[in-house]
Each structure stands twice: as C-alpha cells, then as structure tokens.
Length: 249
Image 1 (cartoon, rainbow, N blue to C red):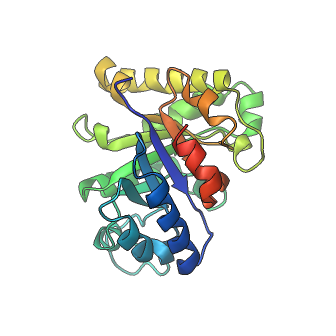
Image 2 (tube, rainbow, N blue to C red):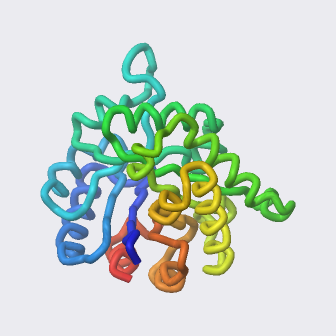
C-alpha cells in the first residue's frame, strides 16, 4: 500500500520523566528495524527528556496539544514555538478528551491546526462520534463536520502534513473497539469527504489512523482493512510489551 502505516502512542497524562525515559529507551531499541512510521507523544513535562532519547531514531516526537496563540498572556498553555524548541515534530489536535472534557470546539481545533502547520509542525487531527451520536445514526455526519471544519483554510499543499485519526469516543479506554468493518466504513467515508474537499489523489494519499482500544490482539485485523492506515494508541502505548506488538503488527 502506497500510504504506509503510521503508529502513534499517546501517553496522555502518565509518566514522570524517569518513567518516560525508560519507555522511550525500550521503544527505540525494539523498533529500530520496524518497517512503519512511529511517533510517541509524552506529557509536556517529559518532552525534552524523550526528545533526547528519540533523536536520530525512527521514532518521531509528538505533543498532545498546543495553544491557539503563538505567545502571550495565556496562563497554563504551551505554544507551538516552545514545542518546536524542544524538538517536537507533530502535534495531536482535537482529541476527544480535549473536545468533550475541555470543551474545545471545531473552530478552536482548526485555529490550532493552522497555527501548527504555519510553524512547520505536522498535525494529527482527531475526529469521532459519541455513543449516542452513533446510536442515533449520526456517526458520519459528526465525522464529516469535524473533518470539514478542522481542515478549513488548510491548503492542498499543507494537507500531506495532516494525518486524520478516527477515534469513536465510545471505544476510547472502554475496552470496546469498533469492529474492523465498522472502523473501515467510517475511514472510507472520511476519505470520501477528503476527496470532495481536495480531490481524489489527496483522498487516496491521506493517512487515516484508527484510535479506540487498539491492542496487540486486534491491531492486525484493523490494519488489514483497506482504509485503515495505522493507529493512535492510548492505554496500550504506555508499556513496551503492549505497544511494540501493535507497532510491529
């Protein structure tokens, strides 16, 4: 497959610097000859520590969020300029926890995405529906809106630096996983939306990850699907013995 697979670990609010360093060392060693694209996204406090350990390896450094402004009076926020200074290459935006717990809307996510791209960072743009939205038959409509609004003002030239991560909110950390067929259907639909926005070549080349209780025992079945190009892994990314098998599926 021309697109290639992109496996990313979102460590969320876990790990001290020492713990993050230990995991980073294990992953660098275990994935040195891995055939896919890899990324880890530690907490802000561990970024500098992990940056030093993954530098020169085949593992990219990601951040879990960024501020909507470059600098200024934004207590508690972290700017794209500060992330770049630490060696961050990619930022995860619009994660369901940011949307639903911290009330980030599509407009805010879009402004962050454009700012990150402007400063040369790649973006993983997360989209996905709640359980009640899926049960009401609105999964496609929700994913369409989040995709269209999230990509507003992002040019065709910038799009190759954007990865979409489909994460059904009802499957995150719940142990429930969308079946490979369910996931592939939404991925295919998102690809169709990209085609409407940017044309068929862009739709064919954009990488769409699946995120939502990805584990060593379901990774291969998910990755076998035509429209699933990788995984954004949460809980299973916190230990080498669960992340490495996913990364090397």
